Amino acid sequence: MYNMIGKLEEIKKQAGEEINSIGAIEELKKIEKKYLDKKQGELVQIFHSLKDLAGEEKIEVGKKANEVRSFLIEALKSKAVEIKAKEDGGSGEEWLDITIPGKKIEIGHLHPITLVRREVEGIFKSMGFNVADGPEIETQWNNFDALNFAKDHPAKDGWDTFWIKSDKAIDPDSPERLLLRPHTSPVQIRYMKEHQLPLRIIIPGRVYRNEATDASHEFQLHQVEGLMVDKDINVANFKYVILEFLKKFFKREVKIRLRPSFFPFTEPSFEIDFSCIICGGKGCRVCKQTGWIEMMGAGMVHPNVLKNARVNSKLWTGFAFGFGLDRLVMMKYKIDDVRWFNSGDLRFLKQF
Image 1: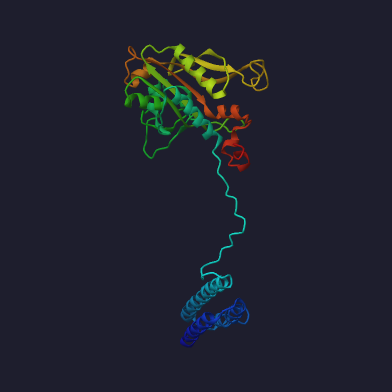
Image 2: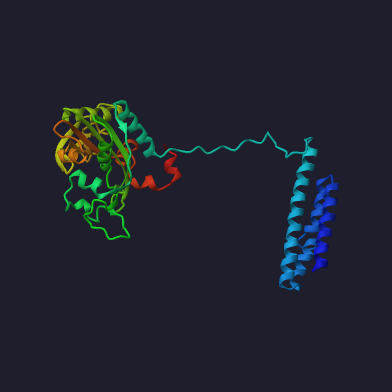
């Protein structure tokens, strides 16, 4: 074993001297073949002889042989760079051909939901609204109870809401039971508790619904919630804000209509439709020949919600609304399948 290690040391020393004395690439190739050739190289011969050694000896000699091989490869590489630089009139540093055309850098693309979200935020900011945020994992109290949902409301069922499992036994009706928020409305409660009135906010963010995925439904979607609380706020204030938003977003005059509806957290409640921007209200495939497109749910904030947020409903009133950001993006860019948003397909993203 010691004879072989001595041989390796000798090869390392001799090869190092020969490499340092060489001044041409062709001579360097001969040295590489002499020591590292896969069939006849001096170092390869030692690797072949490892099979004749015992276990510990084989490990020791193999480790030394690998060390010498790494030394030779690095020495040959450094010498080649040095020789090339001298041949090109350089100073010995790595040579760079500045005439080679550069590689085009791929520019990233913002997601269409990000683009529209920024546009929506900008429009509402111009009308004096602040942008609020809140946790995506919520308590049952903030998400349902404080928003005036009945204890047996169907939205609480496991078919509609993603409940988070706990290691501890928790009462299904416990206010502290955790879930993935199915809407951004719980941020209303958090914000009213922590800020002084009056207030104007929008709450864009991800929400989660226990739904089957298809062309128009996803289990994860994006929503924009709006809330305005002040003295003497009424439906007329809401209509003005929404009309102004739609006009700025679609860059044209838009009509809206309010249809009576029901939501636990607003009273009165209504659905908002706006005139189809594709056909101008005449009827087309997009609006199903009705001339109208359903956009959002809205209403005047229920007194119980204000009470749960520690707001005096006798002094303050407000309106709230919520709409799907994904649907707004689909209408703006004429996207026919919501699943494109999470596909990660660069052919889709590069269009925006």
